[in-house]
Amino acid sequence: MIKNMMISPYNIKILKTSKTLGKFLIQPLSPGFGITIGNSLRRVLISYLEGYAIYYIMINGVTHELSYIDGVIENLTEIILNLKKIRFKLKRKIYNNIPKHYTIFLKNKKEQITAGDLCGSITYFDVLNPNLLILNKELDTNLNLTIGIKKGVGYVTVEKNKYFKKKRGKIPIDTIFSPIINVRFKVATCEVHNSYEYDSLIIEISTDGSITPKNALKKASSILIQHFTLFFNGKKKEPNYLQTKYKDYLDYKDYLDYKERIKVLYMQKVLNYKFSENVNDLSVRTLNCLKFAKIKTWADLVKFKQSDLLKVRNFGIKSFYELNKKMKKLGLYYGMDLSKYKMKIYNPKKRIINFREKMRNLVKLRNIMKLRNIIKLRNIMKLRNIIKRRKRMTKNDTQK
Figure 1 (tube, rainbow, N blue to C red):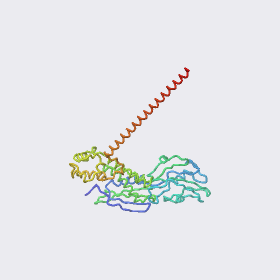
Figure 2: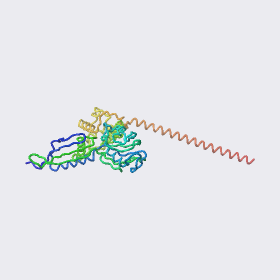
Figure 3: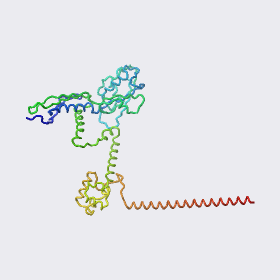
Figure 4: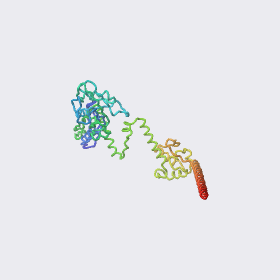
């Protein structure tokens, strides 16, 4: 008899599928795993999936939440509660130039304004619940409404939405970004090898239509996997903010330029790295050969050809292969163009020429300073002689 044996589920059965509702059966599971997996998936689905929602509103002539609008039956708090229920979906995958602010002019002669009336001015998004009632107004009243839509995760309070610059009339609201409406799970027994101690998990997911239940389950499981890989591997990759945050706010060309800058900075660090600092990576024999050839950095090594390196004294095939392995790891190769990375290449002849030029310039400067001093002294002597003459002239005039 096999009892309390660790077992993994064979497959996932789809019991119900639609755009907004999905029911999934996961079996068989080890005893106790039904509650642990169901509870963890439910928590991630409800509070850690991305979505779009309104985070502030602005109406002309309205300054705070408790004010009334002329010609509108509802007060502003009721209108805000209705606006929070609107669900948005991107029309296509766009990474840049998504406007965050939309101005809506409600000039239509209608008593009831629904979410579908906002679709004309909100071009990048589809409103998933167009029949939702927002406000009741008189026929002749016109409204100028501006809303801010952004991407977020879970539930965000009003205090966190106050980060933008304070402008008169901007009213921040608490937002619900999660596209999941409800998640329920049920744990039952399952038969494995004539034993009913194993679990079967039934998950029921209902969404707002911006994401299918199947994709929502995939995303939730991928989030959990990303967290658990840290304990399995012991290492975690650095978060790539360029693909998520940076693309939303900048053009794709700027994103590529930013990537190239990072590559250039990385290569500059690698090429300036001295061999005397990484004795553990290379053997003593190869380091001695490089010292004999007066190769101090990777930039000096890259300038050489393979045939020239083999001519160096005591530089054999083993050290050659050792260097090649290290160069592949760092992304280097022989005959690299160092002008891309703005490297200062050491050239002793140029250095001597520059030193001589500097010395000549110094001599010229010294000569110029000497001449200036001589001219100053001459001028001073001339002035003294002129003063003495004038004094003599005055004495003679007084005596006469």
